[in-house]
Picture (tube, rainbow over the protein chains, first blue to last red):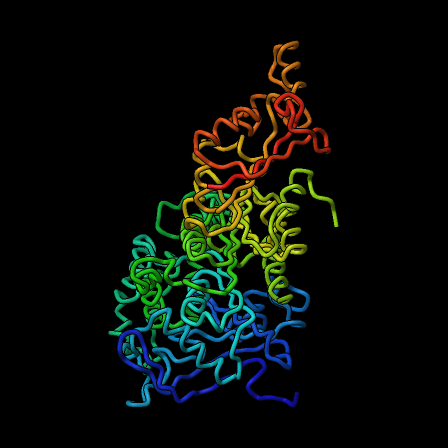
Length: 374
Length: 196
């Protein structure tokens, strides 16, 4: 195949759209920042779409330009890995509403020539998926060998299977849920309120002065980060140990290691993420309830589905606990769909899906390979 | 290919090609793989042990980690040609309800179990006065998953009480099939095919 400029690292494309949104609004044009890895085979049957999580990005298996860190899922994606750059053609796009190059509140509103800010339409998980479908049309990919995602990426993967069953041969949904629970929504609301309470937020119109609500966003990240870990994991990593000191200071400095760690998480996050994007994407997740869109019965979302499903949960994940995955599995059973499910053991809470887990790799590898024989 | 456990071989030999099969307590998926590869069956599995589930999924089988006592309710009526419950009935909380579930989900059901009335077990209990530990029931009374020991006669009575039809019965002693005569005394292991 001759060099196709649509494929490769750090790609950008502006598609005319319009993209109709669940809110009733529509978006045009739609900008995409994405990466592809590996080579699309002649019959275009080896494409895998990887969907990233809330604050993730398209730098799935390449160095992040802002942080200099390796790709966020290189444990699962790479040569000879379960998602195999030698065997598969892999696409990862910055999600709609985010801030790494795809359309979102920080991109330019063509009507005003200024950043959208809070004029950006409220989006949903289904909107994200429809946008990705638009991108796949542009890339000439009719059918995915697999769609794979963890956390919010899993919400997109399960929505892909519900919205475009004929386009998805296999779906892998890791540490995810088919709806946001009251507790999930509650934690997100804390984060949003932290951002909006920062005087520098100014109704979202902070782009012109390059003076974003960093304190609010950092607090939002700190609160959220706790939900990605487990009590046991925090205890093991930090306990009640003090940070670079021998005694408590009787003040409000970061006395404890865990405080220092969280502050660092918050501060480093604001360098790579936009506060308004955080508002929009958490809203999209809160609105997510796949059953609601199907008459209240999740099984209806998968009626007659020929897609193969693989779900994985982690025993210490209290953000998207096993019971949420099981609800999807039961719905798939009720719909007669082909489904595998397993709860893996890991001490690291929700974040487990991003960490080294040989069992997860073994399952994803076997599941994907079995789909290739068909 | 590795050989199937004798009770699984009987089940595999008697399942119609191309059937839809739910294997409850499917272990590492040996029966499912044999049915898929040799008989073109659409086999699904339910298994409680995580390592077994991982092995089965890595083989490309569709297996859900779950508990037969609680997770069968999600499967619709008549959604499978066969429900298979091998060496698991005696570990379930309520074998009678389990039987109902099997024949609700499957049009037919294979059930295999170790026979607690085998003469060796009877002798062991009679002579030693202790709960028997044998090849098929290898654990002590306190750590065994077999919480509802059953004999062939008990099982027949349960089937009759549920008004289910017996469509086939096979008996094993060692790894060999044994006759139907005096099975409750001479068979270590039984396989039944039932219809709802």
